[in-house]
Image (cartoon, rainbow over all chains, first blue to last red; front, side):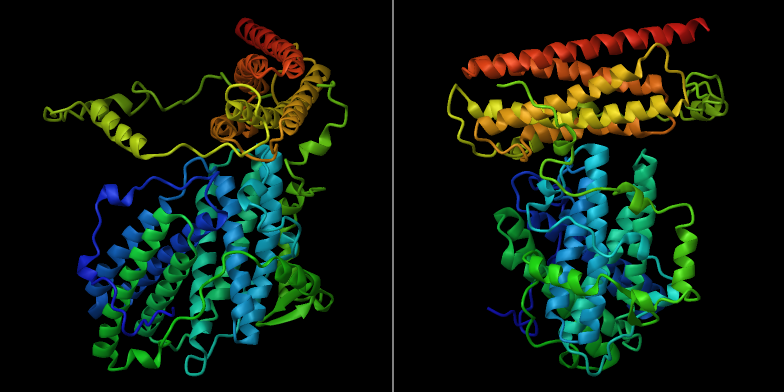
Length: 395
Length: 230
């Protein structure tokens, strides 16, 4: 049944409370829980982190809304803690990274498939093939550094093979700027997708920047430095998709709507009963926050939220099942590059193009992503299965 | 050449420059608490332990001989994971040897390569044993998962370019100590499961691991003795 966000009021903001035991739950199982449960946790951590970042910046620019922002942001913060702390501690940072890339791939693939605007869909497909390659590189590192098989985390839902080579993803800043939607004519789903994917990519960048220096292995440190840089490019790229002429309060309203959509998607598909209850609770919290912000919109902008928000939510996010679409996109678009806001074929990149010069400069001492994955092909049980060829003594 | 025991400006001790004087100014003493801090922490941890389930489950298999086949599968999975990580750790040690960045003492590179191949063969042995039991060797059992957690420290230590060959060998010593007991347990479990052929193969692996351990101990003693006397 579709969620009627204009009439479902959820939990009032002043009833959205926590204590420390409530916040720190027993985490999910790395072995027994579905990969998409883990990926929903990763996504929603990213959504909350981006909301908090946005609300903090907005508070620096909107004196009259600082207290209201702080009230909502406090709850968003607690939501982020509760959600993120569901990740189990037996996930190593590199294993968590595999989860981050799988989440980025599957959610971006969903957006690319469902996006009504063909240009926006192209932007998502462009980013998708880059995250897909990151998964391949990190899987190689997981095998070669920790002796582990990435598929134990991917659970057969996402393939491990090269996408658009990471070494060729480096672009001059001007070639990460994309056209934005028109706030007056864009469909609500277009706006929701832009907010959702920007949040997902920004958190990946932040995560890699935090954990990169924790690795002792220089190859790992370099790979994280390289891929974190691409994720920063992605955050720029997807962040461009929003119409800059939307007022901050309009953006806040749309962001709250996106959060309702995201939690509702999680709740509808979640198989873990304990986690499903959290998604339900937070759908209700986000509805309460949405209606809180709707009132602010009416009071401060004298506008009707219905002119900005959809009457009902779009179909929920699919967290897996995009294998064929990804293969098809790989077949057609791996060789795409960017020039300004447009996409061009690799052959069209001229020697004087800023991105080609930039790429040559950053790769001048070699490419970590190329080095880490030399000769790597995913094998069940790791490539060490192929390494030993002598027969085992008969059992 | 790098030496891990050179004297220098280590600032971590209370007696280090600036340490004693500033810390001695910290004369604050907490009021007496109704319970000790250690006890309070233990109670909290016990409460979470009570609520928490296990790390995960052992995947189903067709093994049905013996008392608790899932325990055997779990421990075989553990061994598989450990040997696989062990092979990567030996690669790290060989890399340190070949870099010549620190003293390598009496260690023979050829023997290191042989031990690396042993780890690969032991990994293969665990793999094929699981297959024979109808279990999935690609699955991560709970004990294999815990291996991943425990070996994080080994991997960090070995892959740090600042650690010497001797420090890397020290990592291998820790690995081999665990490896020895791991195979010893598997020999017992295999006999308990009436898998005598498997037990014989595991005994062979154990003998090889004992050789690894003996070499690691001897090499380290000689390396440190040489450094101490030089």
